Image (cartoon, rainbow, N blue to C red; front, top):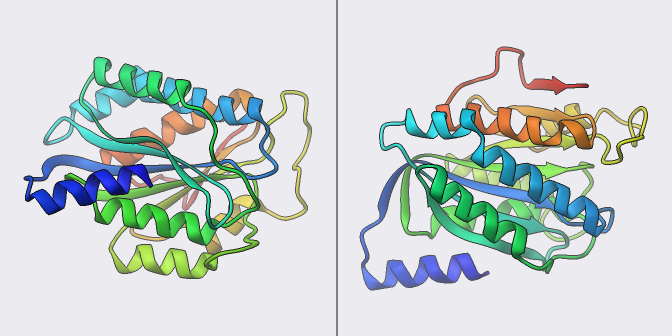
Length: 240
C-alpha cells in the first residue's frame, strides 16, 4: 500500500510525527456489488462532507485544529487500495485539495467482501504513519456484513481493539434513488453493531439511500472529529 510505504519511510528516517487531533482511516466499499457510479457517489459524499462548514468547524475547534485522513477502497483480501494517502486537513484549502485528489484517482480495488482484511489494513495504516493523533478511528462503509475471504471480521475487529482504535460503521441500505425497503434480509445496522464496530463511543450511521449518503458521512465525521458519542445508543438513522 502506498500510504504504508510512505509512513514506514518517514519512521525509518527518524522524522518527527505531526501532532493532530484525530487520525482517521476512511474505508469505502469497492466490492463486486459496487459499480463505477456507486463508487463515485461514495467518493462525492466524502468529498462534500469533508468540505462542509460543519466538519471544518469541528476540525477548527480541536486542540490542534487539524486532523489526518486517508481514504482507502477495499474489496477482497488482496485489494485495499489507498486512494488518497495520509493528508493533514486544517481548513478549506486542504479539504478541497483532498477532495480533488479523491475524485481524480482511478479505481484499483475489486473482489468479494473481505471486511476483516480491510480492518487489519487500516490498523496498519494507523500504526505506521507520520502523524500522532490523540484519537485513532476507522470508518467502515459497506452494504453488507458478509466476509468471503481473508481474515475473519472478528480477527480484524479484535486487532483494532487491541490497539485502542475505535471502529465506526456506515451501513448503506440502498444506493439507488428509486429503491424501496431494505436490499438484504437482515438488520444491517444491528449486524454492524454486533460484529464490526468496537471501542468507546463507537456507533453506526445509516444511509438509507443515495440522497442521504453525504449527510450520513457529514454527521459521522462531526461526531468523530469532536470526540462525541451519539445520544441514541449505537444507531443514527438518516431516513429521507
